[in-house]
Structures are given as C-alpha cells and as structure tokens.
Amino acid sequence: MEKIPFNKFNEFYLDHTKEISEKLMFILESGKYLRDKETLQLEKEIAKLCKRNFAVSTSSCTDALYFALITAGIKPQDEVILPTFSYISTLTAILKCGAVPVFVDIDKHTLTLKTEGIEKFFTEKTRAIVFVQLFGHITDLRNLKETCNQNNIILIEDSAQAIGASFEGFSGASFGDISCISFDPTKLVSAYATGGIAVTDNEDYYKTLLKIIHHGRNEEGNFEILGFNSKISELSAFMINMQLSQLDNTISKMQRIANTYIGQLSKIKEVEIILPEPSCRSTWHKFVILAQNRNQLREYLLKKGIETRIHYNPLLHEHLLLKNYNYKITELSQAEKLKNEVLSLPIYPGLKSEEINYICENIKNFYTL
Ligand SMILES: Cc1ncc(COP(=O)(O)O)c(C=O)c1O
Image (cartoon, rainbow, N blue to C red; front, side):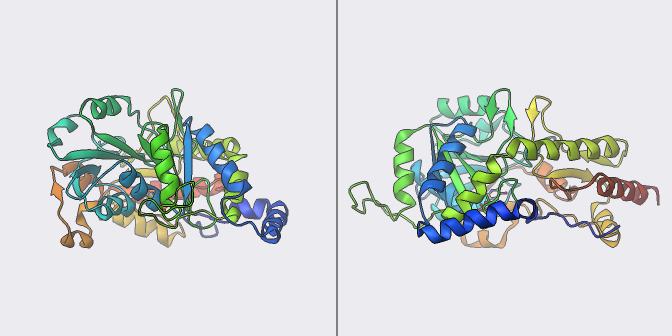
C-alpha cells in the first residue's frame, strides 16, 4: 500500500484541469482581479447557501473573525467567552481587539463549547461569545442564541469548518450574529490560497464589514473608519464558485467515506468516534476519534505509511503568546483530558475504500498487539 497522506489539496484541480486552466487564463487576461463578477457571485451564493441576508468576503477566516468582533463593537477590556479547544485564530481575533478571552470547557461528545450553565461565566463585562463549530458537524445553537439575546451578548460563530453542513433546515454558519467561514486549502471548499467570508442578517454589520475590508472606505470614497485591506482574488473566487457548484456531490463522497470508517471503527472498544447529532448532515471536514494510547497509535500508523493529525493540542489557553495578555481561565477538565485522546484520520473525497480498510485494519492490529 502506498503512503496515505492526511489530506490532498490538489484533488479538485486535478479532476478539472482543463476547465479550470481555461477560466483562470480568461480572468488573468481580463485585467479584473478584485471584487468583480466572481467575487460578487461568491458572496451571493454563500449568502444563499447559509440562508443569510449578506456576505462579505475577506482574505481569510482569521480576518473575518477579527472584523466580526470589531463590527459588533467589541472593545478593549470587554470579556469574550470562547472554548479552549480550537484553532489559534479564534483566540487571536479576540486578542487583537484588546478584549479579554475567557476560556471555557468543551462538551465531551461534540468537543465544542460547553453551553450548559454558560451563564455562570457572565460578568458585567461579558460582551460576546465565540462558538466554534468543529469537524464539519453543526451544533444546534438556538438555545445559546436565546441566552445571548436575553443577556445582550453578541454571538459570533466560528464556522471556519462548517460550510455545506446542515441541521434541521439550518445551514452551517446560520446561528451567529456574524458567522465566519474559511476557504483555506485544508477546507472542503478551498480558495487554493487563503480566503474567508463573513455572513450576517444585520444590514448595519454588512455595511461596516464592507468598509473594513477596503481601508474603511465608504460609498462616497471617504475613509470613514479604520480599515484593512482584506480581499479574495477573482482567481480564488472562481475556484470557490466552481467547488460550490459541486458541493452536494463532494459532501456525498465525504459521507460515504465517513460511513465506511464508522462501520469498521465502531467495533473497536478502544476507539470512540466524534459523531454529529443524528439530525445533522455533516460534511466530515475532519474524521476525529478519541483513541486510547493515542500517541503510540499515531506512531504505529505513521510506520505503516498513514499520516494523521491532532486537533487540538496545545489548547488555546496553553499558547505561549498569552503571557503578554490578560485572560481568564475557568474549569477546563474535559479539554485537558481529551486533548491527549483526539486523533484526526485522513479524509478527503478521493480517499479509496481499500485505503480506509487499510487504515482501520491497522488501528485494529495496534490494539491486538
Ligand atoms: C476553527 C477555525 N477557526 C479559524 C480558522 C482560520 O481560518 P483561515 O485559515 O481561513 O484564516 C480555522 C482554519 O483552519 C479553523 O479551523
């Protein structure tokens, strides 16, 4: 068996080389590289997919999260609640605002922010919660949204990994006052570069986001607020649009792969699979298991040519950059435990059945050694 990489970023391109090359050439020749047809189509399609009124594309989801917080009025010393189990951008967006991150524990089944009893962390300074949707699954945030509304707290949804997922009529990125999606090369829909988008139903937020991505410029051409230069290129927007047109098919492939994994791995008692809620149509952006003797299993798989990753360890509150910032820690025992058990297995649309079988066989073999 050939080596099995953790991901294959060029699969979509290799499957559509001719069509993509022709269109990219056309865009290059047109001389129109920013906020033209492809970008506007992308914003329209994403708003439709997420069932939101507005979408504003950015250079990355990292930017989108930061812009979302500024747009929602987060100021220095405000407290922002977040799970300690996420990618670094969730944290840095908060720090860049000068706000104080309040790290909260995760749910042991979904690995997302533990929302039950979240009110006990509210103080008079709490202004926002950043909820992170993980692994292509969606957690229902209707109750959390209600709690936020009652307490005048903004809900930002880090939906970096949630594009295309759905849940009882809701789509990925549909719960936040502003929700942010990533198109980085690891994602199911990729910019083939960095790329992100913020979606919202609030027209004022939309107008502010549009200014922020373009140096703070208003419609009259005046630089009205402090802004940034954060855009997606027409080339990337085209790549995203093309993948969006085939998203259903891609998700079906991911679901078939996940089901094959589930069928085989659920028989191994040392392994627990992080599953979506039964009514969620996950995209399986990541296939994550909790594994006994995780580090040894990982080494064993690597020796067999199988690449895996760990999402996430260290936890956010353990990163060195925090020594320069104010922050608050709460009881984090689940995250502390699970960071030593999580293991992400290879998953991408072209992963073959025999490769999945080989991975699962080797996991079984490891535990029967
Ligand atoms: C949960 C989460 N938040 C934020 C980001 C940042 O996205 P980007 O790379 O587009 O800035 C990522 C990207 O991996 C992510 O997984």
